[in-house]
Amino acid sequence: MDGLLDLFVNATSVGILSPGPVVDVDLLAPSAAVFDVVYISAETGLVRRARARGMRASNVDGMLVAQAAAAWCRWTGLPDPSDTIRRAVAPLLAEGDTRP
Image 1: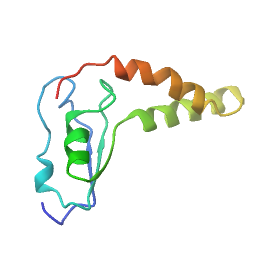
Image 2 (image 1 turned 180 degrees about the horizontal axis):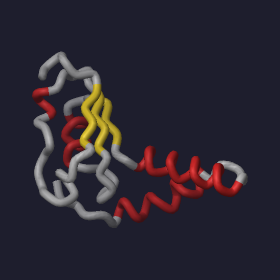
Image 3 (image 1 turned 90 degrees about the vertical axis):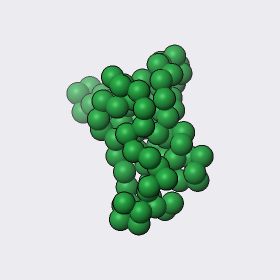
Image 4 (image 1 turned 60 degrees about the horizontal axis):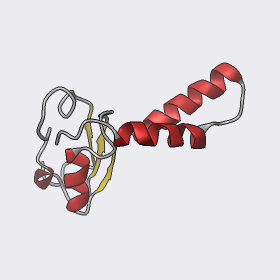
């Protein structure tokens, strides 16, 4: 896979229902970005390993906040509550499962 991917997205249950990495980040190009759509912790093993390798990596918290804020605005017509949602989500992710 080296050099073939610009982005790797984990949208599987690996990291939620089963432990272990979904991919060996050493097989990805150093310039590739990694996004893990796992809601169980603030930093998944995949994101941690990618960041340790110097790769751009993100977990689901940004997506979760953006989806919730968009739904809030659409359904209520009220201003964007992203900051409030971000503060509410942070402790929930921090308490999440710590499986790799």
